[in-house]
Length: 193
Image (tube, helix red, strand yellow):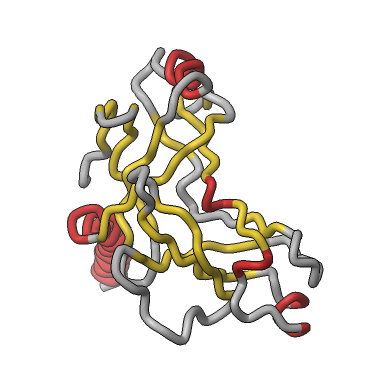
């Protein structure tokens, strides 16, 4: 009797764990498969992780949001600048998507226009009511892992010419990296699973 309970408990726990991992993998794959694509201009930082191999650490133009773009700039918003931020990106003539507005907290009251998309990030630094202040936004897409030995060469090339990340945006604004691009050439693509 005790062995049956133990076995049932172990099987139930295993099913819960498998279900949770499947949900994480499936939700990422859904964004990559069905999300709106945006191209973000990147800047490299560092190419090596001892446990996972080569990677390129990325910074984005959209990660530095000027305070003047924030539509809900009031005293309460500046005190609560730690947390979610919605950044409206608009497709530019250069093919890259650039920030045109931002909203702290719940997001924008109006829907994005044509060639616009709202992305969700977090900010952890308060800001002054100064129009020249800049908020740093983290979108959770700061690293792109590469095959062994590729990181340093790509980082070096990024300092010479323009690279981009093709990202997919979910309906809630979550970003996932789809591919690393060198101009119009796709260097590496992320698999769905």
